[in-house]
Image (tube, rainbow, N blue to C red):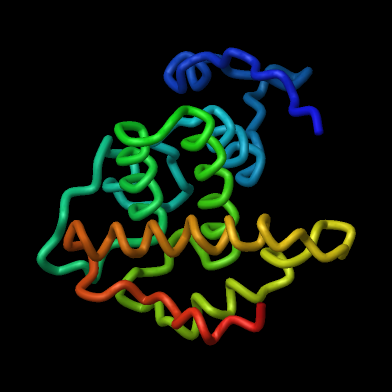
Length: 176
């Protein structure tokens, strides 16, 4: 299987500085999903999610004694920044896309303190995780990767003190 060639991308700051305009001269606004997908593909750790707290724009997410204000967007930004230091650029980009799926499906503004193992299990067995856009079942390794990325991010949140206990479902709870 061939993979698409990697294209060099501008840093996020330079990309943001360019403004598109309509034919009338008014600024164009990119759609939320398009902007997030572009950021995830570029590998930027500081993806700005519309309405996200300031922690999502910081380079790292500091452990918090009271994690009630930490969102999935904050978790994603911190975990992906951690991957910048520990994983290859390809892994980092790939995991960024998987985290974008989790943010879209679970809600970027969902508080970690409100996330339950049951809700994570619902995500793990959702159509978005298990089927393609054309409703064909995804390959088991693809499904496993999507689940693994969110599970690892939640465990990282526990290890860094963002949550007391990672809300991950037991492995036996998964249908496949």
